[in-house]
Length: 287
Image 1 (cartoon, rainbow, N blue to C red):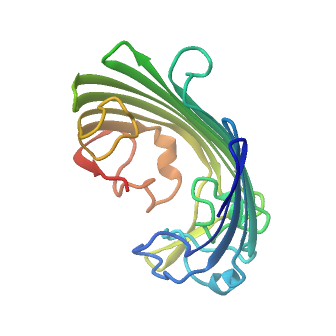
Image 2: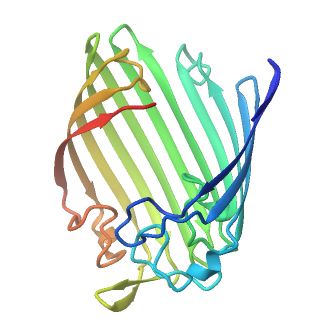
């Protein structure tokens, strides 16, 4: 539902969802568990979003493994409610006021079930005391007719997330360079760096019928990607779809991060420090 004229505008919604992702190997409950009430207000380039959420049956899941599909075990004080807010600035005309382009920035804050800022309402493992603060910003700077720079930064601090006294801090910097070759073909060059400082403070997980604890770690992650890309629309429009990408990626991380868990390789089974190459094809279609 939307209200308002050309100045202040408000959008309001009620949304129900399950926890985790559909089809997860470790968590197969696809029933609706979290109810979200959201108010979005827009004025000029500004956006203020607030969400209240409730999952009164979340305690019934406490003897299960993680609702996010990992091997983690839940705490005994998982949240039943949550609150989330985002203040965002969308500038479709200027690259941070320095040159013609695009820039968008957002500051997000959440508590309880709202402490999952990237996908609000998706994580049922969060404690009732969980709190997170997240900043994200990206820009698009055209350089002549055939080149474009797209830098981005995301940083997040969260505490009491899965256990009272835990802390998760990380920051990511990314730079994508696009080179238009023809109207529908471009070469993409991308570099990423992430710093992580993770202190699970006793959070545990089950693996091969044994229970282990996640270890406190800190270190860096690096990634370089080269991706020839075909698009139906404007080849330098970063949001234009459909597109198909052929990519080659090299990535590595500090050896200290290998200690985090014996079975959790941050998304890639068997990957440890020392560097690895990935090759593949990626297709995206938005509706």
